[in-house]
Length: 89
Ligand SMILES: [Zn+2]
Image (cartoon, rainbow, N blue to C red; front, side, top):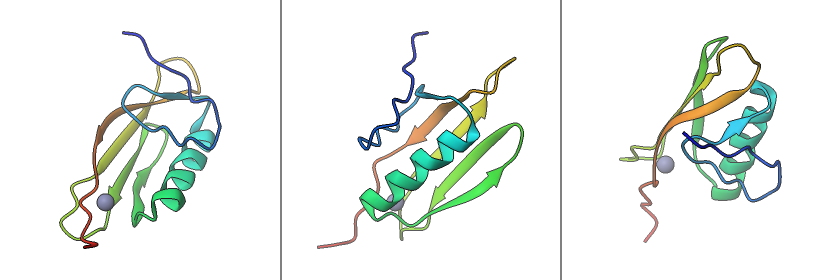
């Protein structure tokens, strides 16, 4: 399956199969995405295996799961359930 490498720009293009150089870059991207969208994201889990992110927005079902790729430091977004539920009217 084809996947794209995160290019580290401010586009914050997080989606399934985007790959990051390492966990540090993944976390930076999540942080940039959180700030840009003003999302209430929390990192639920972060270890050698992967990173799990939830959104605390009320009624929001956003979930992101990224895991480490075999034999390299890269992390890839496996699943990302978006979009966010916006309660702003
Ligand atoms: Zn949300």
